[in-house]
Image (cartoon, rainbow, N blue to C red; front, side, top):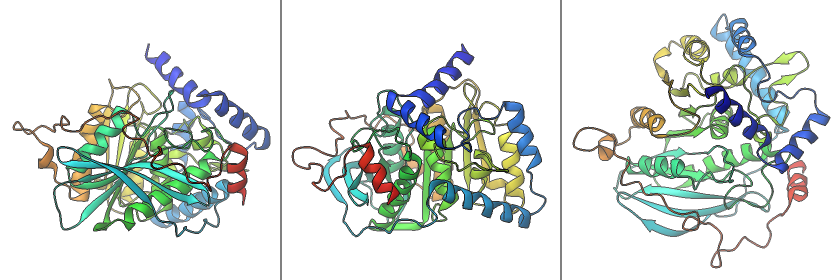
Length: 394
């Protein structure tokens, strides 16, 4: 049963829709340097890490430069697009017990609009931590509006953080192109940086208390953005960091960021670029993170040891859990974020000292919609896979 679950998840990640299949076929036809899905066996993944334990901090920093350069080159992002001057539209504020939700849209590229939900605490603080919450894949193309995303965002807001969750391309309100376009990895990385820009531009955000956490494909976005942008101070990539699995969707492994000729890396090394900033690796027993306590986490500890910061990397392993961002994983994440972002954890605890997610309400997708009759998709929006691809190529 366990193996069947892993296979089903892998197949969904790889073959989630006809559009994704088309995008993957196109990419594989033009590149032999793509590392897709279970590119390594579990044994090969462990052996790769054993062979790449750095001898010194200097050796790791030199290796880090190679990894970052290939990520940027593989995505075609050696020169990052300029930040646009257009102002974000924030509307439809809803107030609940301890937090508010607002709908947001803004341009990440000329004519491409990011869509998301902004959660803010109702309790007043001198400054606020900011937390980004990317989401993973779903066969109904829902992410930001799924229960597990709403609950963690609302609870983090009740803890005193300003939280932004945005749509992967093709999901929820982001319908200008399909999720499976060949360059979705590039587009979503641009969007991640723009999400961070948006968060940091909000009033009273403490730039030294910025975190990110997402599951599965959102875990990939988590460790990629943290690797590329030092403004992220704390991260909790969930059910994704693996020595042998590279992600099965174009938005994770559809561009050659892991390999070029004789050069090879994997997602563990990429996540290692987080060091020495605090990182929580959340893993489970029913997917490609099942070996984390004995393979990926020990390697990460060696990376952090180079900085004498072994205490800043942790692993919550849930051997009986499945591939999601369920309650057990969230209960591991909240104290970690509270500790390193100075959040108000007691504000979400019940009389028994347990974290209570009860006040964090789940709304319908319609209630969280970004575009509607009052706030339509702007007239300059680029539409269709072909036009969005041209935008990315430019």
